[in-house]
Length: 93
Image (cartoon, rainbow, N blue to C red):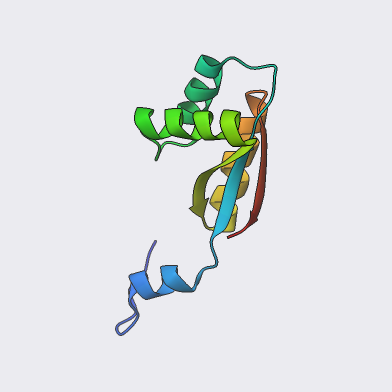
């Protein structure tokens, strides 16, 4: 159950939570289609276009920012990506 405390703005609280970056690393094993599908399955906030962009950035530059979010979400997304056979890390953004 969520309680509301007058005077506390949820948007301000979110700004105080330090963001963490989920980084996808390129590999020579997985197909581009698998990477895009894994991104879409693992990180619901991503669109088809953004997932394709992340895949291409990782392919071209060796790594790509997937999403920046609170630590708990970053750990979940990293774990989901790794369960798909991808290499992902998190770091403070």
